[in-house]
Length: 595
Ligand SMILES: [Zn+2]
Ligand SMILES: [Zn+2]
Image (cartoon, rainbow, N blue to C red; front, side, top):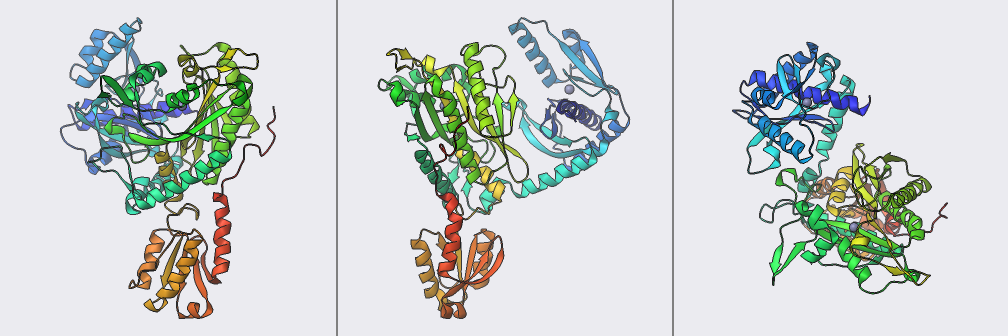
């Protein structure tokens, strides 16, 4: 089914649910009710909190309305009509006032419309399906209710947000619910807590993540691999501060177009300093710190930079929406002629890193010039967009064109990966920038002895280390591949008689760089095994009298089960094989770049 059609059905379902709620709760005050990814929601101000039983009742009534096959009628209304129609709906009146203001600002005539079915009329632009009968009642389900501040503002009333999901067929709904259940079990917040990977403390502040030893170990391994791979692939490492003066953010334009996402400034000696929301201006200052010649380009500066962005507390979510996060950020400064090779370089490197983490299902989206104001000339956009497009083609990545989806300062490639449950995560971005080189007046001396403006390409790979960790926790459900597992080998001596032998094994594996636990005496064998299984440790080595005498260990692999007795040398061979993936490789000149 075309996306737009499903969108109209979901939007219609939101109206139908609102009708059901107003019938069951006369006097209900209505907020907004848009369609979203898997369905829709609607916000209500009600005299009491909704229970599970209420949701069932609302859903039953909504399905009846669908079966009644009621037409949806659109009506243009004047401002006066709208105000009297929604006289007892304060939130709708506020929306009407906003529409009036927006129309005035844009110097456009005010266009107000409503949609009506069965006497229920809602302020709405549409689109909707022509009749409720076009929606399969069995494909609708109300999933949950949650508190939501009106307009996301914690100073405004807390409304009740009813979430629903709607599909074309009953089978699609069932499929969705099954995926939902699986993703609930894999929720990184649940695994993060039960596995002792990370926490968020109200005393530290919302959206600020504390990494516990196990989570920090996975993150360290991921970052160490990535950093070494960067250096092997011709990036230069740089480090920049967490704060920068207001003049920097004025020049960069962040205080104009990004101010809402920045924390309020700190004032030091009359100067204002801002926590950095991005690292680009710092890398630009490194480029600018001395004259540059065409001979030394491209410059590729990379950093793991912790940045801070203000997000409303209502939208914060585990590791995926946070207020402080670490970007694996890189900026390339190059000549026009180098731009294509540089995009291929960034793309090929990103694909290599993502695939190493077991993310194979990757799609690219090439975002082109947006409507309205944009930095750079028409030719800049055409050239850069064709460079991006040729680069994804040459790397053989399936891609789509996101028409008009670029930022005002340049076109970009977004890489999205699908996890084991088929959910798409936006990770890497390769972005042209026609804005900052001009704002900072960047130049290099060309072979003609003249000053030229360099091309600037932003590249984020994990995007955010926090979100990437959230993705890995859910993708692997805590069962990390051997190279990323916080504990790789758990030792299980059957009794205290084998503790010395276990310590010897631990010493040998440990000195080879493996992460081993289980040499404390006194714990019962069954407890050791259970804990190692709960922690999804890749290898469990059981050792009793027989193993000590034979100089072996009995190996249980997480993925393959019981492997029987092995010598330590045999086990080492197996582990070493699994670790080869974690040895960074040079990939940027693996194959010739077709032009
Ligand atoms: Zn509507
Ligand atoms: Zn940047």
